[in-house]
Length: 470
Image (cartoon, rainbow, N blue to C red; front, side, top):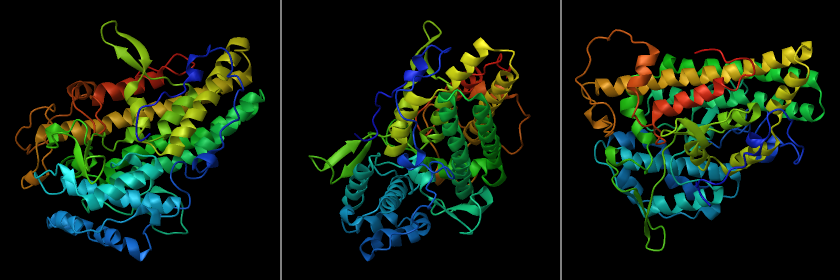
C-alpha cells in the first residue's frame, strides 16, 4: 500500500513506565533497513547522480536543463514529447531512487513552474513511469522529503567529510543558492543523526544486559550528535533568504491534497494511470515531518505525541498527522520505526533505576545525560518554530517583493497580504509571533504553530527531572 496511514505499533508507549521493555523481538540492525551507522537515513554510498543507460537520457537531458526550461516556460512542451519509458529497465535500488527523484522534480516543476498557470494534470510520459517506480519503491508519487533531501545530494569533495560545508544538492527547481542551502541543511541534519542511532541501538542492547555504565556511555555518544543537530538548523539563516524561500521555493513543495488555495483545485490528474487512464490523486506535499529522524528519536527517548481533544482539553489518541506522514517515508525506514517501537526500552529503564536507586551516582548520571539528550531534541523543535516564524509567517504578511508576482503563493487561510514592507517592523516576542501564526498551513497540511508547539512541549515533558520551563 502506497503512502497510507497504517496502524503503527506503539507498544512501548502503553507499557507501565516503571518497567523495562520486555525482550520480545531482536534489536533492530540499522543496515537491514537501508540505514547507515555513519550517515543515518541518507545513503552512505551516496545517491546516484545520473542514470547512465542511454534509454533514460530523455529524462536526464531534461534535468540538465531543468532551471532553464522552467524559466523559459518550455518545460511542459518538452515533457509532453517524452517517450513513455519502462522502469523495468532500472535494476538497482539506487537507480530506482534516482528515477524517483527525477520524475518527482520534473512533475512538481511541470505543475507549479509556469507562474500562476497551475497544471491540473501531468502527462502520460511522466505520470506512468512515476507511478510505476513509486510502486516498486513503495512510496507515494509526489515530491517527498526523501526525493528532495535524502536522495538528492553529493559530496563536493568525494574524499572529504560528510559535513555541511562539503555537501550540495544534485538538483534544484529554482536554480538558487537559497534552495540548495535549504535542502542541504536538512541533509546535514540527517547525516549527523547516523552515529547517534548507532549509539542508541547499542544502548538498547546495554539495557537488556542491565549495564547502566554502558547505557550512560552510549548516551554521551548520542548527545554529541544530538547537540550538533540542534545547532545545524539555525544555520539555515546563513544562505537561505526567507523571501526567496517563501515566494520562489515553497510552492514547488506543495502536493495535491488541500491545495485549492494554491490553484490546484481538485487533486492532480495522472494521465495514463488507473482504470480510466486519467486517475485523480491527492497527496500531501514534501515536509520535514516526513523525516524519520525525529520519530526514531521520539521512540528511543519515549516522547509521545497525542491529539488534543479541544472539547475536554485532554490528549487522547496518537497524533494522526504524524502517523499520516509516516506513509510518505521510504518503506525500509517505516519498517525500522515499526520495529523500534516494539523494542525501545531506554525510558522504562531510566524510570526503573530512578525508582529503585535514585541516590546512586550512576543513576544520577544516567538521568542527567538522558535529560540532556531530550533537551537537544527540544531545542531543535524550538529552532524549528523560529524558522517557521521568519520563513513563513513574516513573509506571508509582507507580500511578494516587487517583480515577483509570478511566484505568488495564494493560500486561502494565511493572514491577508499587505503592501511590501520597506522598513523592518520592531521585533516582537517569540510568543506573540507564534500566536499570530495560528491557522497557517505547512506544505504537509498541518496547522503549523499548534502542531510544532505541541511537538516541542511534549518533548520537554519527557524529561525525568522536572521539565525546564520554556
